[in-house]
Image (cartoon, rainbow, N blue to C red; front, top):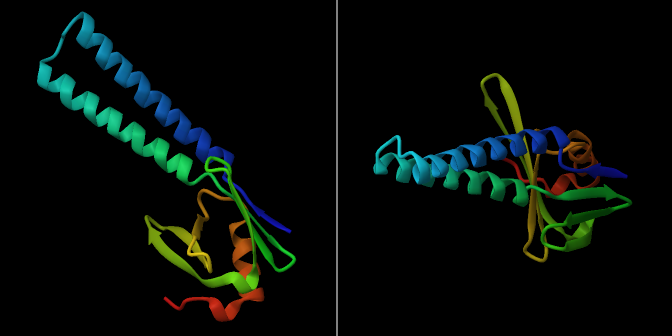
Length: 149
């Protein structure tokens, strides 16, 4: 049985960035309410940017928090934040595809699996464990459903 889950280090580093951004936002708002060291335009722009970036990172973290298990001709998908827990047979997989992008001499791989009930999941090698094992499992079990890039 193959278990793909979010990498702890990724979520720790993203959480640290969110904490830093919230600290910066708190500092900016506190400075505005007490000292007003900078002009009003600076406070408006910096608070808006810090809030937007924080929200984008939080949404990215929540959307990527998924667990995928594969084995015994089944794929189980768990999305704890949505309360979704589904098990699919391999014959319910419509198609799957791996995209490979090389940036700064690092390889980024993303695996997308589409199911008959019009849902799809995406996993990548930087945010999930056992990515290579899941790819090997799909190549071995359902190679004909792979979409050629």
